[in-house]
Image 1 (cartoon, rainbow, N blue to C red):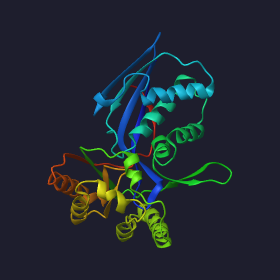
Image 2: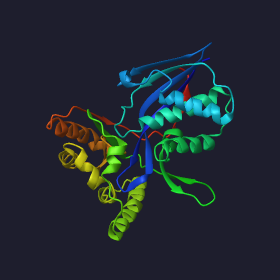
Image 3: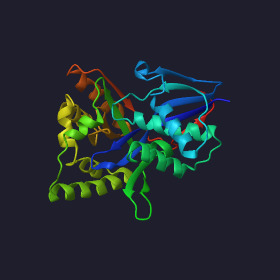
Image 4: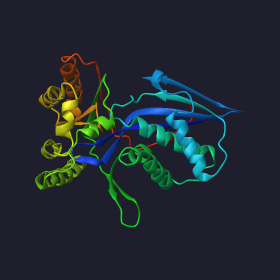
Length: 303
């Protein structure tokens, strides 16, 4: 019987939470796994499906191969059907959906030899960091910190129901490698203190929905001042979002998607303002009012 795995998109960093904070969003990729007699058959539908590899280089398939190698079981012949709603290379965790979807699907096919914690650790090993794969797997907003007796400690961050995440996805990409290349090798003590304070304020702002705290907390000095220069029209979109009532705007992951936070009453106005501002620069954009996905990756009945 086919197994269909639904994996949420993620937004990472959230300003001062650089490389440690991530949240699952109500936008999904789905992966259906069917055992077949021989070979490999991959199909893809949905947004940017024409850019998905349909051979053994496919990231989902590569992840499944890694899983069966890890559990030392023979690799089955598979048909993998992919339904895409998370755009590629836009800072919404598309690679994390492929890794988590591949691991969860392979785990189900092989009789669930791995626990959720083991899958989280394996996904982090493959991706190189936990800030996208962990919320994609278990849902919610999560803070990851290096542990003492184990590699990572994962802490849930409560997200107040009044705080709406609004994503504006432009029609251009920004690679993680390019986004990292503009960051400085060292930072001042003042910048380190600034970000430490604002991360603490961000955590409390998300938990309480306190507007003043969120407006201050979305500032950052570690990555955004450098990456903003790579995103056409960034400052105009940010100003438009704030003028429409957003608490602030940040880069989602490495970009190019941007994320605004607003209250429920003003979220639609913020969405429209962000779209209009970016289109003024000739940029095609798809803006969405989303919510935080609290379920994480789920095995569902059908694609």
